[in-house]
Picture 1 (cartoon, rainbow, N blue to C red):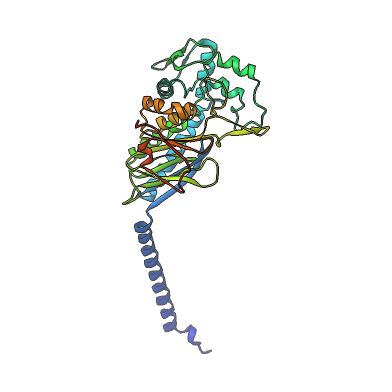
Picture 2 (picture 1 turned 180 degrees about the horizontal axis):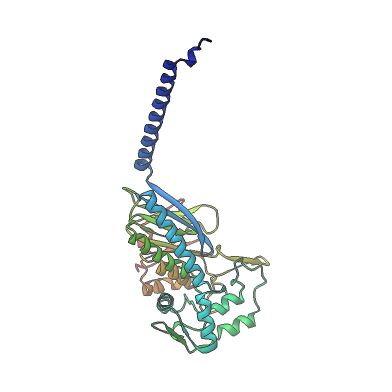
Length: 364
């Protein structure tokens, strides 16, 4: 009978099993410890998806991972549906409204779409029409009714002038329940300067309904933050419109939205001149006095529309429009690089480097 080696004997086998069990126990304990440390030191959940032509970045603080994942999926589905419904040049609910208004002067839609258009009209009125969601024909003439920006040249001046002479205003549209009527044949809704903000507001409501109190929804640099990042407020950066990096940072107190309209977002260059997508309804051309306008407001929809309106208003007229729209914090950067803002905004900004020129307005 052959003799057994030491490794074949029962006692060493038992020791091996005990050793492996001990290793498994220690590994499990270490994993639990690391998970606990992660929960304590970095209780932040991140996710991303693509909608409204930009990357939507989600940050949740102090949320159970399973709940965070569920909320993220719900947000993605809601944003994708809104993107489809509100798209100005692809088949969807908004395109149907535009088609019905053009053909019949009236349209029937669902309550959510009616509420969206009514709020867009209200903000347009407050802005004296500088934010005008009804100039879809002008936006299309410039070639911005495409997923990719146009390559130029700019449209002929006589074509621009013809559309400017027919520019509709919010007074030309009436929303009553699900019924929308217009007395102006040139009405074409384009919600590119408003839909993203309105969607973020709906997204924040969805998060709060699911019990999430500390979060940021960031849509390509335009965002709304609720709650705090632990014991400190959320701190975000405002993009420099002319060079890489951040122009200034700001701490958000409470539930606030920060939106910036800039000539660097969608544009084309022709013969050395930049033509961007923010059209001045009064001239039919891209607004040219400033390169960016940043607004802080509790509601993302208001911040979105106001950033466009104040960009169009320019350095001289923006304070009056800001007051009418109920906006307290504003910063503009003009074509010469000068900073225009009000004292309330100055008190909150932390500049990366001291601006050469700051032009202060009166208190809003």
